[in-house]
Length: 370
Image 1 (tube, rainbow, N blue to C red):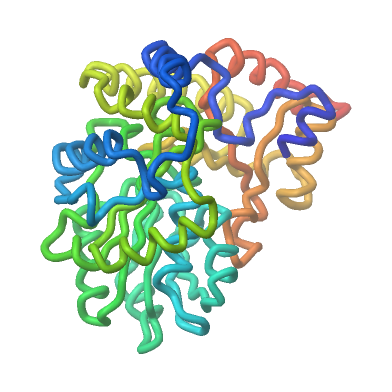
Image 2: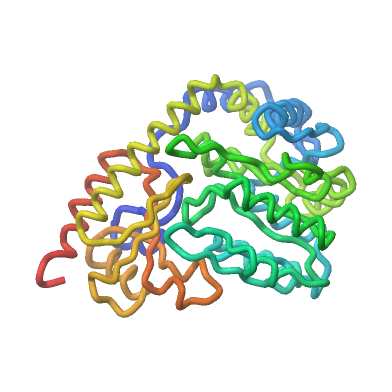
């Protein structure tokens, strides 16, 4: 959709990256790191300064104990961390539980690891986790469950009760959890993010994945990480080494500056995205889309039934080619394509003026000719 958007000079509300500046402190730190000649390989599994800072952050914010030498691996974005985790712990033909809708990479990750994905649908608008559906997905061959909270694309924040259910099933079936928590700081309406690894003994059976792309508006830096029990972290280090050797050295040094930002930064971040959520929700609902109000992250799933198009791919192509706005077809987030064929996903990680211009263009949907 991004390539089509560029072809048609559209506004990209498809891909989740900001069109505004990254924090000045991070850019200055990156420049300084390059000038100080942090330009060669860092330690394969991450610079010492960054791992120390991540360990402190994980204990303070996520309530996860992490030894920077034994439990942490710095990766080329959270995307690599997820893939490395799958390759490190899943054997061919073992099963991995995925919750629908899911971030597009999880299905291919499972297939590349030669795992068998088992899908559990979550129904809108609440996307609540139904205990019986989840229990039925666990078998004697289950190796892991992938949890994305806060969730892309739904904006769901998993509740304490839901996380406890997942923890109980992982314990009962002696399997692992791989949690993608990249949107942990972008949470609205007084909700709080809880890391699965902070529950009971789950730190001993959870790989926690995070990164800097979303919180700090640096999606092109590709700095992510995984926190895991020591034995699993050792396997992750080996897989990561053969996948990418290491993440960019100067940007690892700059990422330390991100973790030193004051709490006010995160408060302002949440307030900014809450405002942008309101702008885009107002635009979409005013036009006739039926939207799921996200609790977190920076995406809106929108039902376009009112506009009469055959399916999500047809509608998304019409949007970018004739309206000049790009969105993601909803079926991208489902194994069972019928569940997403009336949905598209928009991002509000854009300047206010970008969102308002997109709103002006989307008015063309109401014109008789369209």
